[in-house]
Every structure is written in C-alpha cells, then in structure tokens.
Image (tube, rainbow, N blue to C red; front, side, top):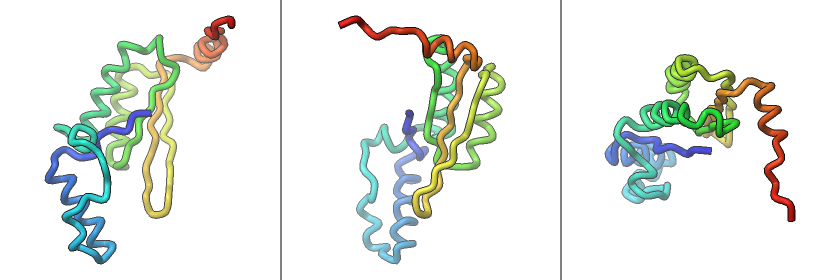
Amino acid sequence: MCNPPFFSSQAEANAANMRKWTKLEQPEQGQNRNFAGQQHELWCDGGELKFIKQMITESQLFKQQVCWFSSLVSQQKHIAPLQKLLRSVGVMQSEVIAMRQGQKVSRILVWSYLTVAQQTQWLSLDTTPDI
C-alpha cells in the first residue's frame, strides 16, 4: 500500500496544518506540525495527484509480476483523473475503497492488469519453499 506525499510544497503542508489547529480552536499550536514525516514523505512537486499518476504509469512495467497495486488517495477530486489514467493504460480491474475514521475520509485506489482468471491462476502458484 502506497502512502503518497499529500502536498505539493512545504507551504501547502504548513497551511493544511494551520487549518487543522484553527478548527481545533488552538491556532497558536499551528507552528508545530501535528503530523510526522520527512520532507520527501510529506510533499513533492505536483503533490498526491502527480505522484500517483507516476506510480500508475510505472506500474505498467510490473503488470505481470504484481497481482494488485494500491495507493491511498486523500483527495476525492483526484479519483476521476486517476481512474481515467487507469483506463488509458489498460488495467483489467480497478476499485475505490472508501475509508472513514471520525471526520477523516480517505480512499484506497486498487488496480490490476490481470483478469480474474489470471489472478486466480497467479494466486494458486505455490511459491512456498519446502522446509
């Protein structure tokens, strides 16, 4: 499961943090991030959408080696362009799984280049070493 960088810049990450603290009516706390991670884990050029698009494009290189690819998607508005890209690269199956924890809503986007029959065959291969 990929947990992509959600933000496109440090400024965007800081602004999101300030909004969170303001909603909690503690804006003075906004100077301290309420999320952890290194710069490359929190933001990248183009943010979440560009990161996942690149992941989808690169997943084509491994389409016969991986049964399911998956990534968290924090912003609902990113789902439609990601699904469009998935159709254009020829995935056989894709799903969006909604998750809700308290007020936080997120999604898991999953895709496979294999048909159901190919997945069944792929999963039935016994690759467990004899001990």
